[in-house]
Amino acid sequence: MFRLEGIMLRSISTIFLVLLLGLQYEHLSGQDSRPATLEGVIINAENQEPLPGAHIFLAGTTIGTHSDSEGRYRLEEVPAGAHRVAISMVGFGLTAKDTLVTAGKTHKFNFSIHPVTIEMSEVQVELDDDWYDDLDRFYDLFIGTSSLSDSVEIINPEVLSFESRWWGRFTAEASEPLVIENRSLGYRITYYLDEFRHSGLVTRWDGEPLFEELRPKDESQQQFWEKNRKKAFYGSVRHFLLTLIHDRVREEGFVIYEQRRDIRGISSQNEYRARASRLISQNVEEGLYDFNFSGRLKVIYTKEGEDHRYVQWARDVIGGPAHSQTSYLELNERPITIDTDGEILQTYGATRYGHFSFRRIADRTPREYRPEVYYERGELLGTAQ
Image (cartoon, rainbow, N blue to C red; front, side, top):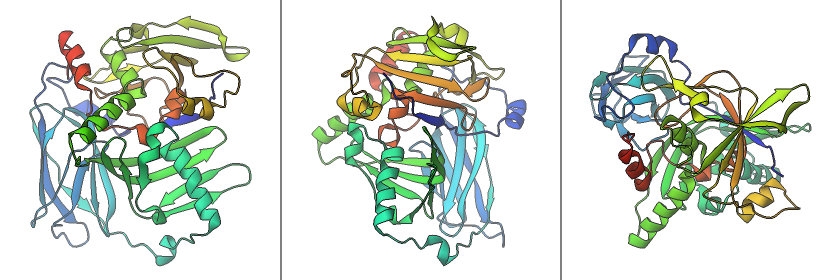
């Protein structure tokens, strides 16, 4: 028995059609691993003055910097691929630009950002008993309930406001970026929350996270973080999508079934083994991939079993922890596009269920993270990025 509570899988980008028409890649999937550079100037849109101290970063990564006294920035060691470049500054909100970065190239992007005025009434939150109950609920739905979530804390929860409806809809807004400290994985996350909504059995959120590695107090803590990062990566949606791209589904421990739709809907009575080659294909642009199937995809990860936290979350009161992890994916549009980091480009392009849904922010690693052993296996097959 598996609890089919879903998370809408969001993207780092939706505005790629124009960009794709104008960009050609010399490399993306292993042929050219040279990093790129982004540089430019950030100015105030109202008075055209340069903005020193603006924060510019690649969403979902640890890569970021600040503009200098003349508003100039230079972002180096940028991996090739699809990225959302985000600019943040107090009094200006968040500005984002979607782009495709070519290996070894210097891209010039100038930004003109507009001041944002926030009324005091918008940020005043009454921290009563109901608010604390909603905060607990937000922790469960957003941070998650896995064992890694025990050491995750939102440092500034007071910026959150919540709204609950009797029919079950639950929403959250943040007047400032959430500062999240994950002491299980060793990251501090600045999360610019654009949307959070839970209704029925589906949770959806959208936002731009910036990861920063915490400084370990000793070698044992660093090893602890590395162990947990591997645990968070293996069996995740991103791990699965990367195995599709690299044609390593079986080697990495995944088994896939396609559950097709008939007059009775989707059920396990109408499922068939699926081959990776039928699910994913090269996009018209090198380095991007089309992911397509009908019905529901059942994904079994055989190299790690369930733990008691998942059993409790799944409300499986009859059975105990299984020896493998079972997840499901449904596409909300067909096909969806995946980049070389295993990220989906369409906003809310897919919904995940089962173990994929159980993993939330507490289990998230930066998009450039790969375990060393994963690189080694990829290099042996010539698929390292």
